[in-house]
Image (cartoon, rainbow, N blue to C red; front, top):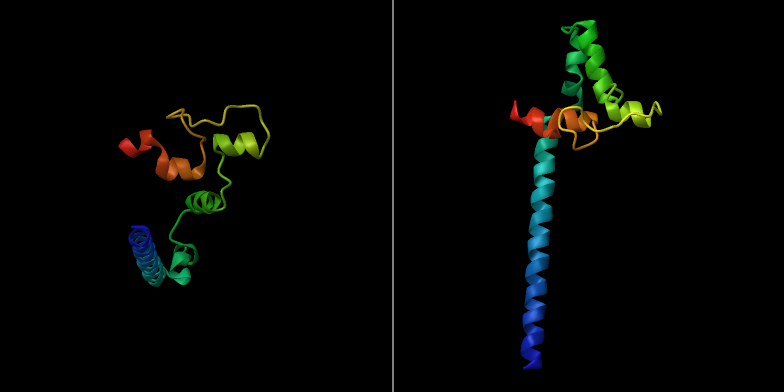
Length: 109
């Protein structure tokens, strides 16, 4: 009985290891494919072409550098005494990432 239980435990562990290895291999392959699609040279091509207005380019670069005047930036970096919650959803800190991809109010639109 005990040896049977031990055998079952060993088999489960082996299966978990195999699944983990498969998952890691799949994640590595996906990462490799993603890197092939997006090259660093192409990432900054828009900046060197000069097709954007200066104001638009400035805003994009500021967003990339995480220095847009969000409420979180104003509170934490500029050390002001305002609430850092999103002005639309009032649930989460108003960070650039939140505004671009996570705000439930903006996601509806």
